[in-house]
Image 1 (cartoon, rainbow, N blue to C red):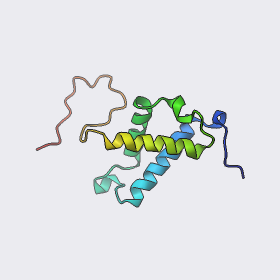
Image 2: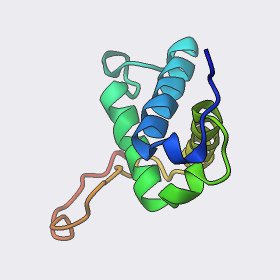
Image 3: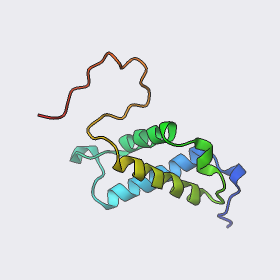
Length: 110
């Protein structure tokens, strides 16, 4: 079975899904997965990754020059963790800012 891919056959959607699997596996293995435990769950990780893809990276740059899906997913996952480490918590992650300017987001601080 040939696991190598050409850049033309790698889709951004496939890279997103593979990267999300890596992030979920990482969080599960470190015990920081699951909303019922106070951590981000699967949907939250997906929204955060979608935010990073839409606002912090050029989608074409993710797959430019890679030879496999795993290489592209690795590249996106590194970008994700780099951005996540600098995120100004507890600021919410917003995919679409349209119409939220007038809404008050309650502060998490006492």
